[in-house]
Image (cartoon, rainbow, N blue to C red; front, top):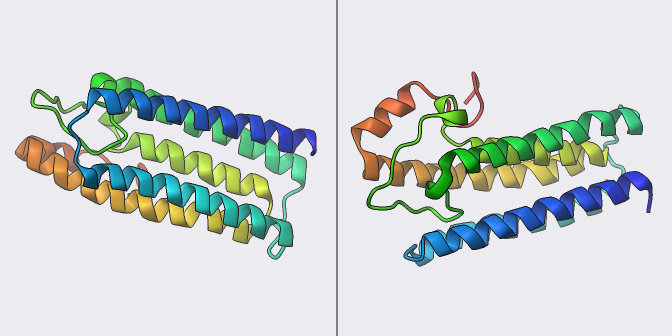
Length: 190
């Protein structure tokens, strides 16, 4: 195992541990979530695991090697991976007690419009996508990057649709107004 591979293993393991702690803490805060909501959370984890396994396998075949030298690629990918994690953590912190890995609202739930939420409605997912794109880039194979990024982007897009429906039902017009002046996931694009 090279030092770069070891670094990515440590970085990825650290990220997974943080995600597990967040999931455990939010499950306690929102004990009344429905089975459908837990299934969507499990689906995301399943897709992430499957996409990682497939992309790591495809990476070994070197079918579409990216035309960027390994160290240069790592010098781009590592900071972007960390930026993505920082965006996700900032989003979780900004939502505070209202963050949940399951789709859930409380009776006294507030519509948070500060921090990253003043620009993006789902910045925690934006952070994940940045990190997974960076991890795919680090692999050095175009097909591996697509095998990692596309399934995760797809399942997050489905989850966002479900979340937006729930938030619209819970908040009504204020959420509709909020949607008019924020981006769903990526500023200036989507």
